Length: 303
Ligand code: ATP
Ligand code: MG
Image (cartoon, protein in one colour):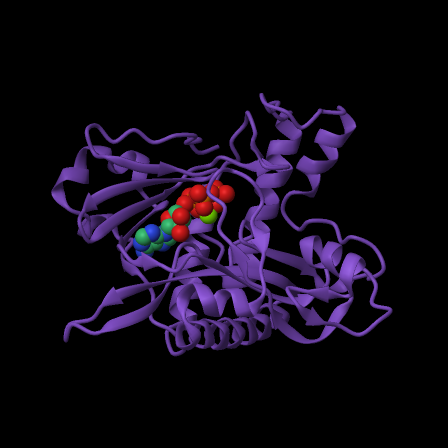
């Protein structure tokens, strides 16, 4: 088993944020270091156990997708090759190897660009209450996990206090970032989803929904450029379902976290901190699921 990294510590390098899974460091005014730890969250809490290989898998998957999506959208990646990391990171390469991305710092749009091809999670909840998701009216009589007539852009406002993101209407996005950026982000989101869905389907996976974050960087001629940022199309930011067991009319088992959720339900955890640790068996099987996602999507066996 590889060493599990729950938290990185990079000396005096300023830690910008420790999210549920990633540690983010400020390298300079225009560069950030994203490190994916092996932390896992469920029911909005980081659990007491790490998952072997998880951080490396999330990083490899983002890199795979950035590359595949390059013809559609530029991205924030500078390099994930530690040989090209700046010298001040050298003492820490054992923590960083395989799980880190040096990225261009972007001015982030305060919008989570969610796209849904299927009715699940908060989309299903909104639909039951209003018949719509983010103000988009859907046909009556849809069941949980049903495929939508066409993919829909269902943006959410970023809530930075650990709470759930809040679904918002397209008009709200227009008011927040302006009509032309709103239109650009919606178009990109739907185009990327189409491409990703096609690839996932060819590997036997349904990409039910996912979330992108975009930002603005300045290109060589000084013009603003929209880039795909954050992580992309990982199991942490997306719902993948195995196509062969797809069964609408109920929630679909989570591809990666089902063993974890089942275990937490079985011990009747009250979903308040501190979150429990996981038994070895659950850790092992979850690690296997992440590896399976990685192997299926990329066709690679080695990390
Ligand atoms: P959660 O763990 O629930 O996702 P979080 O979103 O606060 O919480 P992270 O996802 O680890 O935690 O944080 C990543 C942060 O970095 C997000 O706020 C995201 O918008 C931001 N971000 C992503 N890419 C860039 C970039 N290129 N430049 C600047 N900020 C970025
Ligand atoms: Mg995040």
